[in-house]
Length: 312
Image 1 (tube, rainbow, N blue to C red):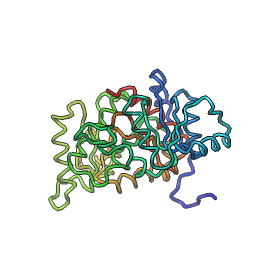
Image 2 (image 1 turned 60 degrees about the vertical axis):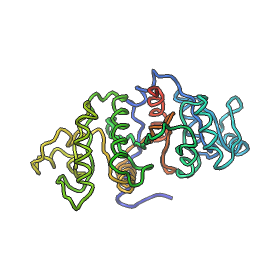
Image 3 (image 1 turned 90 degrees about the horizontal axis):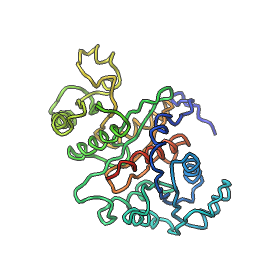
Image 4 (image 1 turned 90 degrees about the vertical axis):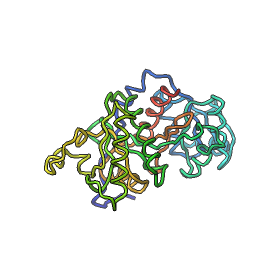
């Protein structure tokens, strides 16, 4: 079946070479694929292994994993396979990460909520007490390798100010690992004006003010409407002075609905490549949408190499 809806891009996304180049000199992480029996995630991991981006550990229904590997023509006889059916697979991955037996965890054929339920609660032992995790999409356009780091589109539903501060901090640290010395971040809102009746504008201004001291190596501005974040021309037309406008490396959204809609619009409507990762746990967690294609999965694997290389 083909899509002919006029707002969908016909451009095939590409995994950014700059991301692969930055991952190349780093150690290959041991990656646990959770619920590894699905054809798409198993094939995605296979391609990551072939590219030198992952040393795999396969977790899930062992019979299904072997059957799927046979179907896609991958000889996995030499790979570790851990039989942990259904929801127990995430818990097993958390155990391996706690014990230092894997360096990253990748989502397989499993719903995101089920996947994360076994990894992020305090009982899983992958987070320091009081720490906050953030999901970040590394998004690149079809004609550019320059990324936009979008947070949070998949984890924090209605993040409060402190959670958005944590998301911004994780994104700034990741941007630095990607070679961006002075990351520029825009805090998304419907307008650049602080309006008391629009809570997000007030909170964005608070976060931007906090960042001046807390994140001195970053340039953070907000509230900012989407046109200002993306366009210097829009900023000029509105006489809005900004070092972020048209130059943003990071966008922090106020809730999961806006972030998820933006990510899917950029992928489906613009042909962008999006690599997804959760930071703030003991190991990076690679998290992509089930509908994403091979280039997105490859980019996520490369992002996992980079994040794992800088884990404390």
